Length: 505
Ligand code: MLC
Ligand code: AMP
Image 1 (tube, rainbow, N blue to C red):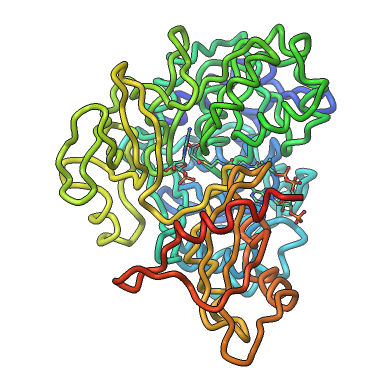
Image 2 (image 1 turned 90 degrees about the vertical axis):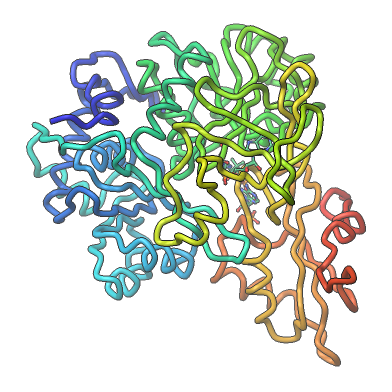
């Protein structure tokens, strides 16, 4: 039965003898062996009662078994909902309540904490651990390795990826099979991926970058992936000789540049280094070229739109820009106040339309209407300008958002937690320069009269409520917050006042 996403990305694995995954210890998993893993995982999903259109939420470590669950979800027509492994159980509770998955897979160590959450929402909970074992794997092993693939069309939903909202509530971006497929096809073509490529894959697979950009490009082109559980500099340097390409967030590149072993010799054989998810400083781009002779190819995307623009493969990869719209994708710059299209070289809101643009936010029609215009254009919240040569640069954000090491952090979510702490009258959270993560979270607290907030106690309280990467890396206490005449907190003034707070020793 037809299932375009499965047929395009996973079906070709069945008869592939070459490795699809190469693990850090050198073990390889051939296409056909991985196909069998997917088939058994699909059997296990069905044994759990998962049917087409059901949500399957996973908060599990990056392993071949975890990737097989994604393939299996596509095979059975389920909607895949990957969650950051750093989320605390109280954060996961929101996603489970909002998406009401049929099945949740969690780390064995988290099962006790997740049990009341899944029980409350009637979801089944099973374990899949960082070593690939767990009761889900046991169930999968007991399944046959022949596969029945669910009938799907390109318009059916394949995944929900949650993005945080400016009000502090996360929104489930609904992605169709076509959203994902159209993007994968454009990228393979543009970036010239082939079966000869070996992608050093160190990104997490719970976000667009690691799951859809990196994994889909590798699967569609027949490339292999050196599949690493996370970014470890020594491992990356050790395995670089096996690879032809890297996809990473800018923090990968600053970490590479911080190590003298990362030099021209180590990278001489490499074909392509790609960066995205956060701004790559022009300085990093130039330092990288001086060190290795390679020009990093920077591209721009979002959870709601997949990839939007890319620097060219053959033409000039211009530092500080994110290049041109992908084939089939339209980009325009508009006046944020009126929505009118602006001429070239004027700065405004980046809007995007194309087969890559998502289907809306799950059960949030008003939010969808606010951001996705009736004519199909999505308002990204990013501010940009197109230069005379047609290159797009991102010059700022209209949304109150911090991007730290490629993770999006919405200040509002943290402010809500801080405001509830004893001794805190109000708070403002801003992103300020951070040497490693680009931006780091800084909390500005205003004490209640006569009650100084206890920062140590606040840090301890936040640990149980917010993922580690969202917890402030610095605190400032001041008598009041700067406000404009409308009463709005002037975050720019705070960013300026505390610009060096996370960079000085
Ligand atoms: C880890 N920490 C972070 C952090 N990552 N803090 C802020 N921001 C981050 N991104 C915390 C850790 O919890 C730890 O806290 C301390 O910082 C040091 O951790 P580490 O061990 O050095 O970090 P590491 O595990 O190596 O992770 C760093 C990283 C990771 C850069 C490899 O953050 C990462 O994989 N980022 C990629 C995110 C991503 O895939 N984004 C794509 C989104 S899709 P402590 O205090 O305990 O020491 C998208 C669309 C698009 O944006 O266009 O692609
Ligand atoms: P997310 O919602 O996690 O998908 O993050 C998407 C956001 O990351 C975009 O709206 C941009 O603000 C930012 N982003 C992605 N790629 C780049 C890039 N190359 N340069 C600057 N910002 C980027």
